[in-house]
Amino acid sequence: QLPRTLGLVWQADRLSAVLIALLTVVQALVPGALAWVGKLIIDAVVAAAKGGDVALVYRYVFWELGLAVLALVLGRLAAFAREVLRASLGNLINEQLVAKALTLELRHFEDSKTYDVMQTARREASSRPLSLAMAAIGVVKQLITLSTFAVLLWSIAWWSVLVLILAAIPSFFAETRLSGEAFKLYSWRAPEG
Image (cartoon, rainbow, N blue to C red; front, side, top):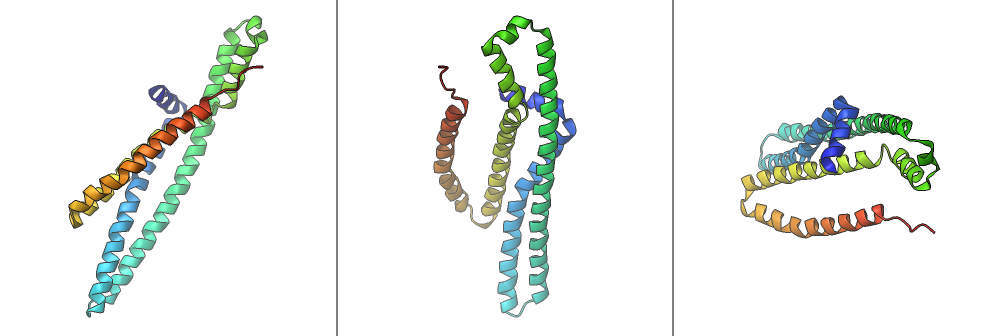
């Protein structure tokens, strides 16, 4: 389902899809940058306490502020791009539904199952495919963020990367199990009475 869904997203609005991908990569790198600047702030405070340059502390604090503002702006831009993509995707799928409906005969519209399938597809045209695509992008974002932290931790203490990996394993299995349960719940249908 994922390749076809990503194809639909790409077909709906290439510019928004590329923008979301780029914003996701930059958003994934910001937490690591914030952590590194936080380390620099702590190092500068320790150095200033020993008679070092206090101006350096302020410079790093402003860098941290800039990164926090950047994270906020990136989040807003990504939300805007998602909404534009959601509208474009909804329009594309609705156009495809109308084209399909034009090929059907009257008996198909009188069949309640066919009509229900078309209504469900129309109702969920913009939400379901985009949700699947955004979930895949979210996984990539988390992997980039985790990799960034691993590189930063490796530069400080190599063994901390092992701790990071071991700490991520229970969360991975819990998320995998809960995602499977959420999929079952989301795709479950009540029996027709």
